[in-house]
Length: 98
Image (cartoon, rainbow, N blue to C red):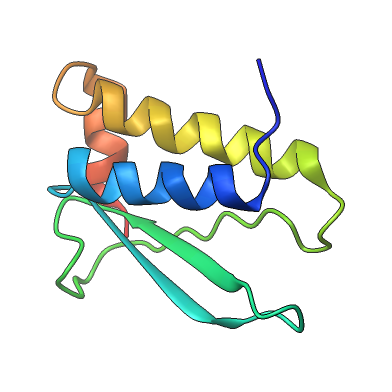
């Protein structure tokens, strides 16, 4: 287990954007006061389409030094990418929420 710094997180998000592109879109919602991108990841079965589905918002790093929340969500997104189409619960979660 390791904690991801900003560069590690950015690399991971770029990897997901390629390997999980069918269910994930990543984009920046702006820049921090330090000039870093503020990343957002959307996981749903149609990440480029707004659908009439229940919406869920998971938030981590409300403050920059809250590393535990960030790591929990990193593992959650990785699990969704890895298990989508293989695990019924994960597939249903991704397919039926936005």
